[in-house]
Each structure stands twice: as C-alpha cells, then as structure tokens.
Image (cartoon, rainbow, N blue to C red; front, top):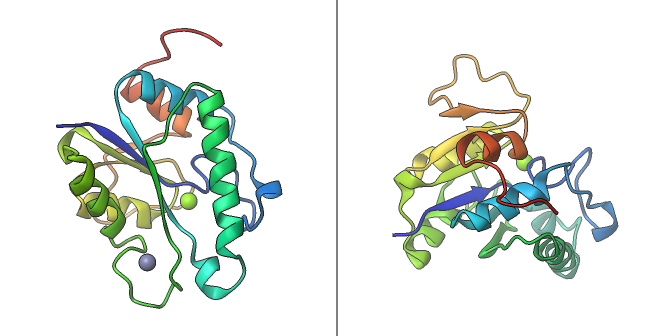
Length: 178
Ligand SMILES: [Mg+2]
Ligand SMILES: [Zn+2]
C-alpha cells in the first residue's frame, strides 16, 4: 500500500491573506516547495485537497482555478517535487456536498483510487476543518494554523508552524541541496 501526504492548499502551500482568485495572487510560502520535493523523494504520494467555493459562488471562473493549479504544479515540478493529483471542491459552501472539508469525500476518493494506507498517511491543514476531514478519513492530522483549538475534539495529532517544519520533523530533510 502507498503512503501519502494530503495537503490543504491555501495557508499550507501558498500565502492567503485574501482569497486567491487569479494566478498572479499565488505566492508560495517559504519552504513549501522544498518540503514537497522531500515528500516526493521519500516516496510519499502528494495530493492537494482544497475547498474553492469561490467558483460555485461566482468569484472565480473554472479556467482561472485551472490556471492557478497549472502554475502551482509547474513550480513544484521545477523544484523537484511532484503532485499525484489536485482535487478541488468547487461547490458553494452551503450546498451540502460530500467533498467540501470538513467532509472527507475528496480524501476518500483518492485513498480508494490510489490504494493509499490511511494509517501511514497525513493530512496537513491550517483550518480545523482540515483536521476534521483528515480525522474522518483515518489519516494522521497535522495542524499548522493559527486558530485556537482548545477544547476541540478531536485534537490534531501534530502541531507545527509550517509545512516545512512538519515535513522536516515527520519525514526528515531532503537528500540533497538545490
Ligand atoms: Mg487553508
Ligand atoms: Zn463539494
């Protein structure tokens, strides 16, 4: 069975001071590209599972989202990393779909199609809803956000300051330098 990292996008891979509706607004968080490369080198499949309700709400066209994801994927490849697949829930937030996190639909879909072993795999997110989705899918959960999670149940399995810190601690560092 395959081990994997499921990454939320906004706030994990890219900065999100405001909703990202255009490729020109997409800025990688320092260390994120290197961390994804490390995951690839260490044999993890890397997936992105992202809520993009702005599409359903009409703030962003599907073409703009595709352009953002093409750019992200290209830069990750240039840095020596690899994404196995990007899944985005583009439903409206209140639509009641089974894919918008905290629902685990996107993760379940990928686990099934890629024969992923959940207990050897991680969900990394900066919102508590990422932790809920990961937990419901049976993944180990890694929180890198700024919300106060005191009293929330379940608690994340790990808390770090960034994807780079999480990967360095859970997986190790890259085998070589750029
Ligand atoms: Mg996020
Ligand atoms: Zn959805």
